[in-house]
Length: 71
View 1 (cartoon, rainbow, N blue to C red):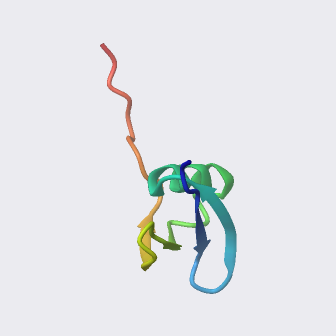
View 2 (view 1 turned 45 degrees about the vertical axis):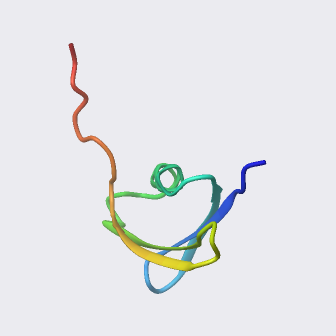
């Protein structure tokens, strides 16, 4: 059974939302679909790892590829 982790996103002042996900990348991508990217250029994320360590990271938004490569 896979363990879902809870990722808490905030802008430093207020907590925006908590997202339950298996990975950090999936949590960030789901969060950037929910917020206004023009208003928030970055977010602060907190979560607890599989080993029980408390982690925090500043994320510059948007994350991912800016331009899709076509063939």
